[in-house]
Length: 65
Length: 259
Image 1 (tube, helix red, strand yellow):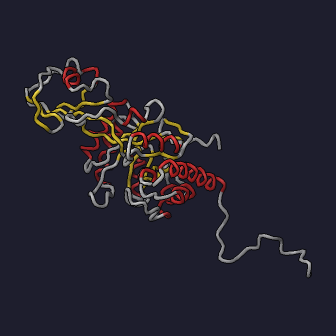
Image 2: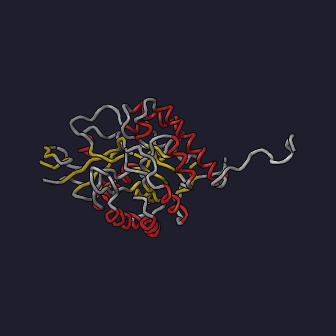
Image 3: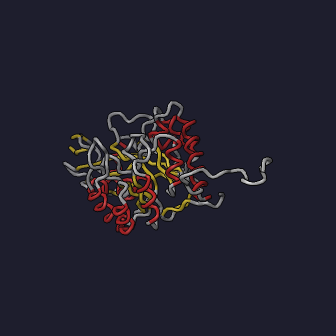
């Protein structure tokens, strides 16, 4: 299905947020995910199903002042 | 000085130097300078993961969140909505509730947009965040942000990354005199004397990034800032002598051999 991942239209076979995180090899990173403007707690990744055209923001921490 | 603790919200620190993690040449340089500074709190930015080019390492592989208090910021946000979204994500990522709110007005000055800052602060306080808020050196705005419930107010010394020192030292002092929350000078500090001056004026702490990261020797500047913050703090606590218009002899003015 198509999702909007960090502003880019992306094709994914993942059906849940957990699967998306694994598909992107981000399991060990300290990240956070927003789905359609709502933050999704990590505990909900397994049972959060992706839908066509979902807007996903996937963020991490970088250097900043 | 051992019990001169810097309290902000529910957190306590021995160091009154807060460092940033931006603009360094490498993660290793960030780590080395941060260690040299002896800071206990370090700011980080929240950004999209680059899906196509992840890189093998990340900042937090070098800056251990168990060792440092991580202070996520909202740098680059120009409205309240983006700032609120950013900090909600940061809290989910690392569980951090102590955050740095900054909402900017434009890209040239990076001056705070006070209206949007206040809007964001009102929302975030209700959501349980402990907000250290970046703002301009306006005593009225500082008080308003305190009333909203921010745990620290962080007036700028000068624009972010300008290294010009304190534009308006009197306002920093006035803000501190009227505040019941810690006042942190954030932005503008260019070298050690600026940091010491901030503390002498009564600031509870200072947040420094570019002055360390852009120094030719980052670690040496980090140590200079560490010492300047301590010296300035001690001078403030000691209570400086008054300034006089004319000289006042240091040696006794009696018992001269010609009397």
